[in-house]
Image (cartoon, rainbow, N blue to C red; front, side, top):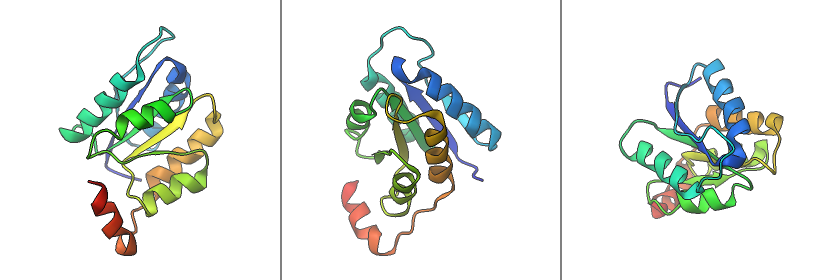
Length: 144
């Protein structure tokens, strides 16, 4: 579907969901840069948001997926970086529209909010939906 590399990271609440989405991306032929974490030990989600932001900034990845318990904290942390447009999504519609209208480059999911099937649907929509540009371009330009 795409030649992009996706950086993926989560805190301790999202490790299982991250593993499932990493496998999905690889099944789709997408290169994945796994930036952790990989276990249940408590970690700080801002560090993982920063890691994905750094991968986008230095070109190791063109898009990303971030996961924490609700998705809220890690999306706030990611959006501190001006080149990141992280969108917290709860369904296929928000995942599709964040790409079409906002040119989001990071999909954010809450592991305690959405299950694996919804997360898979969101990921596939995010992966396959192009940015429309046009009437949205002016607003997106104001973000970065």
